[in-house]
Image 1 (cartoon, one colour):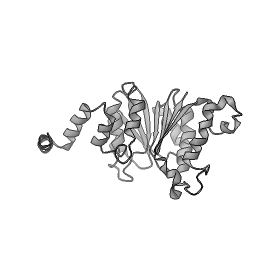
Image 2 (cartoon, rainbow, N blue to C red):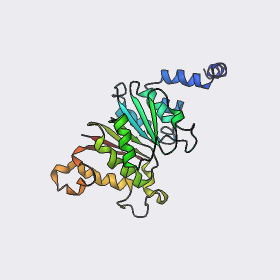
Image 3 (cartoon, rainbow, N blue to C red):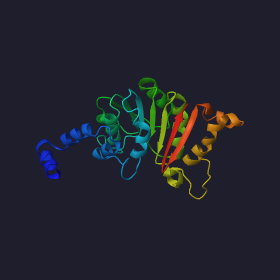
Image 4 (spheres, rainbow, N blue to C red):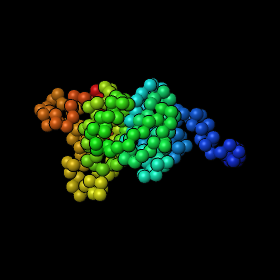
Length: 235
């Protein structure tokens, strides 16, 4: 089988193999991540967790936003996970943002905008033209205050019943990213922001005024924590 695959690759090219495999394994998020070489599988074992929540809705017509394209300042590098999402969500439109120009990576059902995830006006413009979104995935700068600000800006305008995902929360413990591993309860880190938000799930039982300045806590249905990964579900 391996020799046959190599022969086909030599005759038709690597892109042909990827295209065929992506159709064959369109319902297997783990396999798609490997085909498109995204670190959401392997280095980070995110795709098995994503599958738990996304497999039942993958055939719906959704609007999905991913923060961060990858590839840094190379205009043709990155976009692996965008291809993965496009193939997995067969009827959905995928929108992405990045601080670098990644327009060359656009394709059918994939639209990319240049701007910062920390820029409120930019995010509102993207939402107004492409949203409102059913799923938002933050795989952007991973800088703690960027992650928190993006959530505060975007979660209120996420569709009802929507899913907001934050990846790579290990930066909560990295000082160069605004994290803190010495003071584990530092309120300015991503992990502590969302750990404190857990109380919002029980907002009916206590004085919830402290949350009103951040996010409408009545919108928080549940929060699920995994290794370096958080899912927030909107009521």
